[in-house]
Image (cartoon, rainbow, N blue to C red):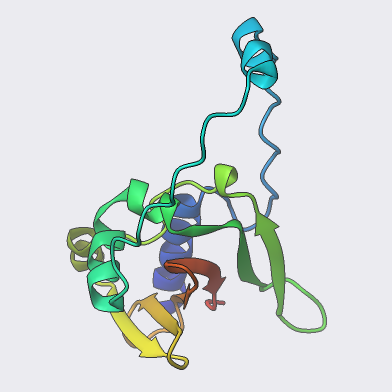
Length: 167
């Protein structure tokens, strides 16, 4: 039963992340150049503006905003985003498989909101890896089904890695 629950969690997380356990996502199709794009490319560059300040430097405030908005998740994710999963069919034993996905290929949200987690029995735990790094683990209690989201405080809090630690 735990294996089925773990497989369901994996399916949920990878569906949310826009990939599946067996395939590599296709590259986004190239957009044809338009006359307006060509005109913009030859127009003088606009004056640079100062970058926006971080909305949240406090991790707890950041996480509350991050988990409730796909747009906030997209904006706060590294490009590319490192994603790791366990290949249960690898021989002689299961092994991690890591790939770097362009943010444009990741389907957001990558972290289910609180209502979805409650409905699916998922727990969320936050831990620190030092002053500028936090891990958020989402998983089914009493099972090996869990996904770890790694965040780093760069200019702002940034999702840098998604590790599916489930087998």
